[in-house]
Amino acid sequence: MPTLPRLRGSLDIIPSPDGDRPGFVVRDPYRYTDAVLFIPAVWAAALACLDGGHTELDVQEVMTRRLGRLVFSSDVRAMVDTLQAQGFLETEEFAQRRDQKHAEFRAAASRDAVHAGSAYPATEEEARRFFAGFLEPASPEGLAPGALGIAAPHVSIEGGRACYSAAYSPLARHPELAGRTIVVLGTSHYGRPDTFGLTRKPFVTPLGRLAVDTRLVDWLEAHGGSAVASEDYCHAIEHSIEFQCLFLQQLLGSEARILPVLCGSFTQALQGGRPPESRSELARFFEALQEMAGREGSNLFWVLGIDLAHVGRRYGDPFAAVAGQGPMVQVADEDRRRIALVCDGDAAGFFELVAGNEDELNWCGFSALYAFLKALPGARGRLLRYEQWNIDPQSVVTFAGLQFSAET
Image 1: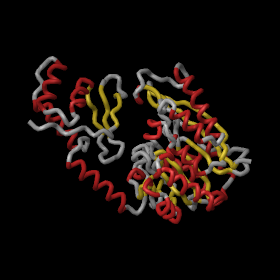
Image 2: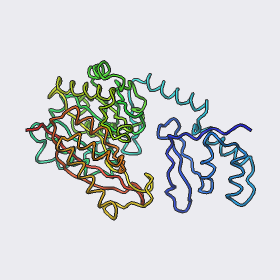
Image 3: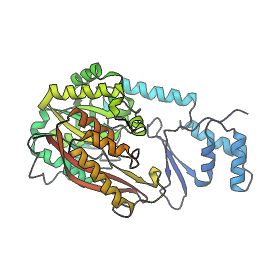
Image 4: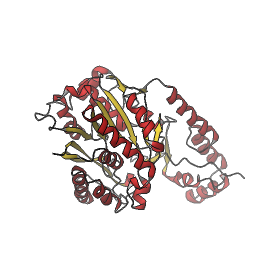
């Protein structure tokens, strides 16, 4: 009997938010399919069998023992057929679906908003009113002299309201920033490690069309080496840059230009305890980014779309996390230690602190922050606001608003 296809490892499988329906919700963060499936808790063992090494009969036997009653092969086939039809299994049909999605993105004239209507309003009028509510009153201070950029969250816009406001409100007093290219370094949640995803496609949102500085994209492609991923499909689905674009459009209008860069994780560096630049491909990209920053100077303004720690059951911890309570008090202390090193421009110290425990706090903004520090070694930061937020009743995301200026 042939083995069953493997369940895709890139799926999101999270506990059901409905306490009356214990089980798991399965969705595809890559959006190769928009389907969302509910798997009853008792069938979790069947999902575990979809590892490429079990047959239909194996699953039938496992589930019969688990339920204490006969499970028919038709029940197993129904589950597998449903998963396969929605592209949740590693099959030839899924590979074709994936390749088609990638081809569609490469051929698209623009990068259209994918989170409008869910993370924020889908119409221009409602969206402008929504984002204006985050930015009033404008910061009386504006940006510090010699300001180079900011870091803002990419968490749920409502969940991160205060930090988004702290980071972006100062820009309201500086409309001249619309004349600069805004380099947006965002976390790549879905991209390959040790890569930097670029795209030339303008970002279209309910607030208009935000052009990409294709001259700088061309330059990074020519000088950034093999770490560059051109027309990275991850741009099509990633929210870490999309959210920043909306705030920029609200403040600066759509005449601004961006250079969107998705920063993949530095997994090998963290596991091996060696700085990312010990890999030649990353060293070359950091050198290119630093050279670009030096050549362009004040023509650039930097925006980082980052979150910090991810703690609790959703992220594999054996305990329920509650913002500001219990273990999260210690997490806050650790977050602030890391932030202090970032603000001091200490890239080496920052890496050592994060890598010392292989980043057990799951700082998804680490790679973007580190790339920024390597590109602008003279940058110094200031913490504007720090927060923790329960993304679900048992899991917490932490984030901050930062402002960066040239060392004086």
